[in-house]
Image 1: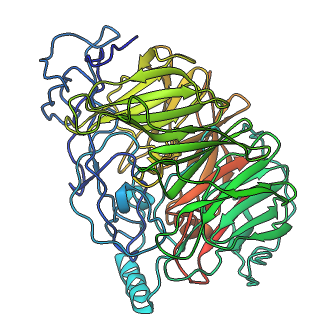
Image 2: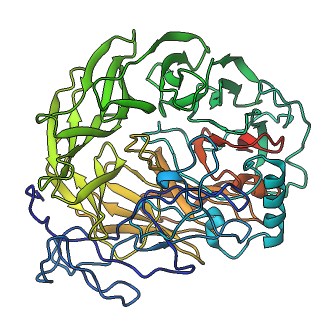
Image 3: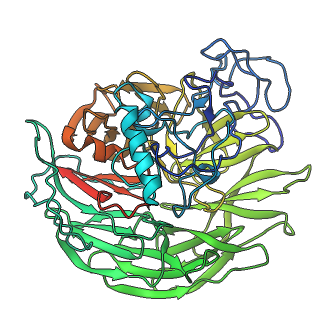
Length: 609
């Protein structure tokens, strides 16, 4: 249904929930937190609770609801002829880490950018959708607290930052991932630990003690040594039998069946700071790196790379456009043959084939509206922040022609509602927050239109894992949420029991079906493949993770594709900031932040049969 600008949209999405467990809630869109022993970090901004309009019914814990953003009393049932339901996310408490220690929030509500130590966290506001659980989901099967305390003491005494040896989880999952065959395929056994191409040659056997029925670690790679300030490792691309990973100042490529180097590592003169999460149809990506070594160095140097051959294409700096255009952190998205380089309050579109500048997405309406994020894939979507600190403050969402920058449609949202994330580009599913009212909304837009098709109505709490930052302008990038042409898939948030994956009808916003996790650990939807939903079940300390498929019709009972070995569960759960993918029967997990010089830290693992 259409929602007129500057008027209360019909229906609603619940109301504030009670804080649970620790009583220290987290904000929405924040990534999972690293385990104890990691440098403490700054608190994220205030986060809202559910609701997008009219007042709601009491939440699941009996708390009275807050009035809607426009102050009307409860008057009528929701948009589908039924009373409003409590919101799906509610209050997300600060979660315990994998060793029973409280987690710390990242700067600006996201993971640390470059590994710098951060100030301690403060109590945070209740959360909306997109708040991930902490390391290991705060569930019962955790390692002894003493171990974490000892690790923390050693890390502090040694002057190093957190190593990927155990811990929490994070989002940053690439959106619009290509569909791949979910059927497991046989893989040649590799000698894990050779570290070919990454400067290590240890012989650690991660398959020691593997039980019958468990998948094996096909190969793994150690993280490169980085200075105390740490480094980024954005992106992971798996296609045409090659897995490619960015790490600090290198781009590394491995054959998926053996883990051996597929092509010579590409060395960059400075730190890698951004990368496209998806490749072009012909297998090219873009990596951005810093212009210098100073902390004030801009993220503005671009390099095109062919994933199959490792050959470099064009490379060039991209300049800032205007007084308030800052390139301290860039965000790169690809739409067909167009690269959008998003920055603070601006964006530059370049042609992938030759690097030619096509247009600049800048301010509009006499400077009152500024770009505030981009998403790519099948469409180029831009968020705008308009009329800041004025009575006309509001956010807008636009679909742009990727070749010309012309707005194909513009969706204006009422004052106070901020665009937080796109859960899907096509179909377009937007998650909004109202900071003042502590409420949220998930709206499904009609294809290639600003008209609202439906709004999600539910009483559950949900927790897709999203990374948000005031520094990068990424609208997508949530792990644990995906969509096809019929359903939006979201994971429920359970603190001490098996969670569900819920399919919501895009046509009505109502729940269509749900499937329960076969373990007590969180099940996260990843992608669609051959008509089935692929989901990842997180590891616990005494059980490895699992990859399952769920049929979208008939029985939705999860069917196990890979059961990861128990012996590597601690390493697997240690990727608190991660990228994951399942391609051709193999599961890949890699870190997106390298924050230690420890030889125990892992860059990437591949699991298979």
